[in-house]
Length: 66
Image (cartoon, rainbow, N blue to C red):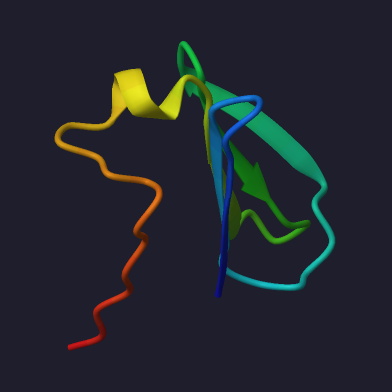
C-alpha cells in the first residue's frame, strides 16, 4: 500500500494495489475510487483532504496494521 499527500493540491491518494486502473468512480463529491478490470478497489483519492477528513493531520501520516 502506498499513501501520498500532496500539500499543493490538498489531495490524499491511497494505492492498495499495483493493478492497472480500468475505471474511476466519484462516490461523493471529491472522493474517487479506482477499480481494476475485475471490479476490485485499487485506489482511493480524496480532494480537499484537509477539509474532508475529520481531525486529519496529514503532515504526520501513520499506518497502523492490526
